[in-house]
Image 1 (cartoon, rainbow, N blue to C red):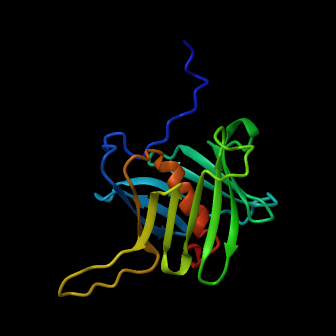
Image 2 (image 1 turned 60 degrees about the vertical axis):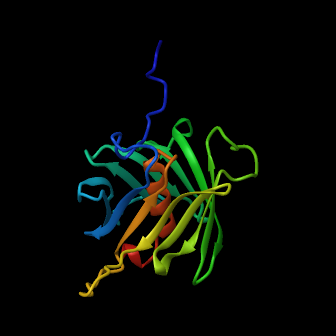
Length: 196
């Protein structure tokens, strides 16, 4: 049986049990984004975009901890995005597309479509909604929350300042495609103060 044609399985950490929530901690470093686990180990990263790009659209590449490109996100001129497996932007490697449905000063909303599910249908597979300034984004499918971002706060007698460029994403149980969630978070916050 030839398994070389099957798509790669994206999972942040295969040792993590499916029944528990996973936190990834997001920080900005050198114009890029780093996603680390609770122990501080790098899980994913997105490098800063090159100003020398000749592409007519914005491109972001999500790398795993070994530096392997996992998902390439291309933004077209109308603000919608497409996600491709690896670094190729070919139709055969297309994983998802995302369209912005609302963009105000306080709220952004997106609808997403996965290849092979409702691709030709107008019904979205997942939705994202939140306030980029507050670093809040909720991703859900139907009535189930897949992931949620939040600012980090330190409780206790000492008040420690946590900069706004450091926050967390919680991936809830039952959804193991951590790379897809991270790619969606990158898209949601792209072009905001987070990248400056």
